[in-house]
Length: 239
Image 1 (spheres, rainbow, N blue to C red):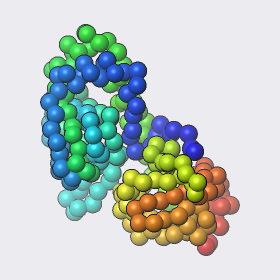
Image 2: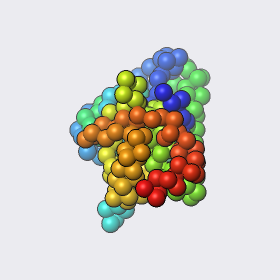
Image 3: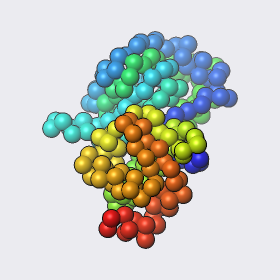
């Protein structure tokens, strides 16, 4: 199994050790259920609150007028989102959309100060989560700037496997319904290019694809490609 990678765009979190602080924040929140594809907030909107996913999945993405999309990250239950606009006073730079039925709590910034006074570690908790996302954005920028398409996809699969992969007898399986289009939007590639690369990976016996389920059957080979193993990358490109 791959080690957890802090630059993964797929954000998961175990609140163990912060139960009291999290309880304090949620005590001042209001909770609402969002159906699949329901908009939580739109880029360009101002906000005086941030959000916590109690259950479900949310994608954070930048949308363009022509319909194109760049997914910044996908978040699961027990994670915060929307902190930037809530704390710096500027509009949201991206939109948040529920990927499935989700229960989401809205936490007003005006109530956070009193919670921090009662639970000082809340400040550390919020800062820690914001830094985690900033790190992810920085690594995505690095990937887009310096890595070729195959290496980007390999690194993305390694990241996803580390965060949400399940180790089984056949390999590490990613069962989160990550489509080729999602991978394209996460890596800045076209869907056709992503499909071609995944087919190359499958022919090289690194992965197996079955509908929305992807299994990494040779983690070592995929990790080597993600780390920039030039010979392997050239072999796949020529294949």
